[in-house]
Image 1 (cartoon, rainbow, N blue to C red):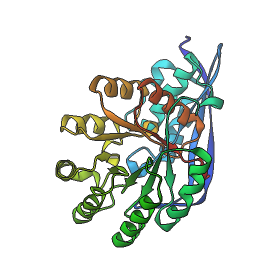
Image 2: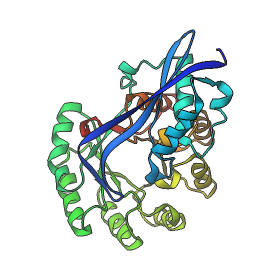
Image 3: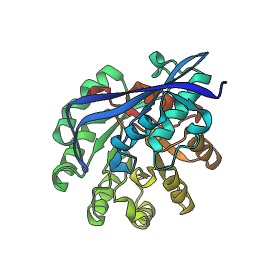
Length: 306
């Protein structure tokens, strides 16, 4: 492969059908940058999809980086991208890898992987899961918690799992929005519900010790998400003896090659998950899941939100 590529980029904005409600607040528009690298063999794309609430660079920082590159990029420029620009690292390396072996974006879902579909927060989940299930025949859903009052959400949860066919699994995602008392209340409930696959990030990222203790006190599996939102944090959590589930949001975690090597060499229990990217970044993340022989449903069932 040549060392130098023609480079261009374009900004995109995608509005959700309705604002996405999480414990972080309301999210109305997903914006990002599609980059293109071109050499004599063809053109390949990558996607910068910032998520500052998870500690990534901002859209303006990513845009400034792209603007200062000019019309050409060298391989050494790509692998010199700062760790402060993790989404840019992901985008440029995935485009580079795509030049070597095109992913085939039109068939990015056809990789023999199960998909987890995100349900809307609150009572809407009680009805929305049925149409998704009928259309996709999937067996895993994800539901945001910590959005409405605790007692209200627990009552909705009980109704929800009661309505599920026996084979359906549900992931509960708090986005770090619970306090310790609330987390214990949730886990006491989920310990009695076989349908719950795991509870994701029950406490804020700075409460690692408390989350680790919860994972030892309750039977429900716990997943880290915001706590492992960068490659450095992923390494740190592993060094601190976390052996639960790791949620890998590849599009905001930096170089794909680093992520793949670390997950493989340490046999991590992982879930590849979305940041509401387009199919450009999603294809690269799903390709990673395929190479890792991803055992759990991938968290990319989000198209119905657009």
